[in-house]
Image 1 (cartoon, rainbow, N blue to C red):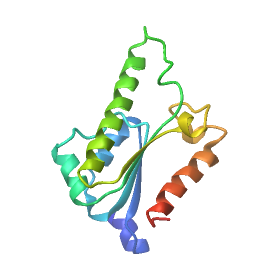
Image 2 (tube, one colour; image 1 turned 30 degrees about the vertical axis):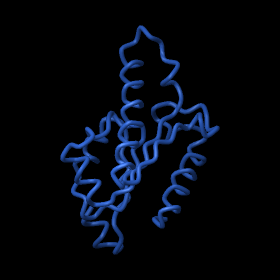
Image 3 (tube, rainbow, N blue to C red; image 1 turned 90 degrees about the vertical axis):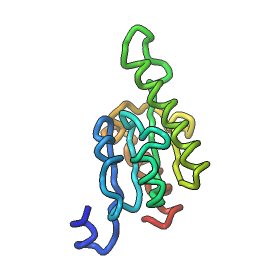
Image 4 (cartoon, helix red, strand yellow; image 1 turned 180 degrees about the horizontal axis):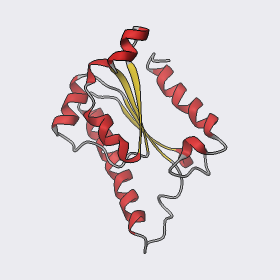
Length: 143
């Protein structure tokens, strides 16, 4: 992250995916301007050290979820896991926002953007998703 700042004079927009989100939540915040988490494997526990560090640094966070979470087969363990992760992300956002932070959870099917797996950045409509992320960043003056 320091390299980005040294090269550009701007803080990094940190994009994480799946279990890699754990690294994002733990990354030093000094050189981060925002975190975009693509179907993260979880969010920081509300009130935890990571939660408070992100909140204190005023890091805006966007969390994106695609399709196939609500309609996964009940007999597959990962179906319930991802439902729990998504529910926890909404609870995280509610608490983070109530505590003065800025967190948006984006349920792409609710936005009318459908057909996206866990690897939404490889889907045929990945430009539409990138545009959505870009608009979120622009609303915060981070484009």
